Image (cartoon, rainbow, N blue to C red; front, side, top):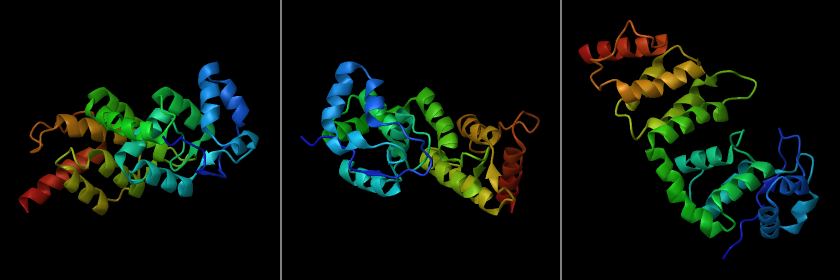
Length: 225
């Protein structure tokens, strides 16, 4: 059975560095000891900025567990690891997350993927993952999500479950919006869950953001033309 390793490691441009031994000391003794046995000895000397799986390592990691990097299950995994930066897992996030998931082999993690996918079927978990995705994907020096990233993330999360997503995506494509803020982001999910496909129950005088008022107006005009 193939042990989960830290062979995906590469320098991280953002992380201040938490040494391997310190991370293990933060875990329960037996779990820390067991995880230590699953990782290469060379990791014990890592410190500073050399403690993150980055984009190249992530591709190799995805290949090993049999999923595409853009698969939504990778977002759910990032959520479970409480990863803070898209495209990176720090050593601390990795160790704590894999301990929580009780995964110490590649095969166990592959088996866990179905469980991670199932979390999306729970309304409460989906909302938590959806809200997490906004902060996960945005640039950390920005309060909003750039429109291209927002469209990609919305497609990942809502593309297969919200019938109106294709036209909403089209609306965003032709709109003046360059960014999406968190209030708009959260309201899109609420809109997708509560507003009927013909928009007949949409209250223009409700507390919806202007973005969605404009979408509804645009869509109705489109239907009439």
